[in-house]
Length: 86
Image (cartoon, rainbow, N blue to C red; front, side):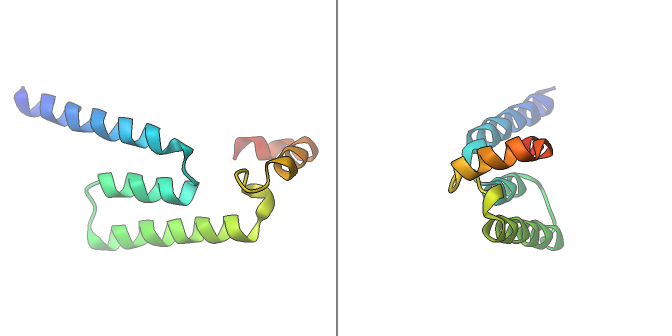
C-alpha cells in the first residue's frame, strides 16, 4: 500500500510539473515530459529527435509560432479554422 502511495505521489509531482510547463513551446514540453518518464537510452534519443523536429517545424513555419507572431496566427486561424487544434 505504501508503495502505491509513493507511486501516486510521484505521478502527482510529474503532472504538476507538466502542467506548469504547458506555457513553454511544444519542443521544450516534450523534453520535460520525456525527462520524467522511465526510458531506455534509445527512447530518450527518439524524444530528443522529436523535440528537434518540432522545433525546426516551428522555426520554418512562423504562422505556427503563436509567441512570435500572434497577429499573423490570429489571421491564419480565421482563414484556416483547423489550425485552432494546434
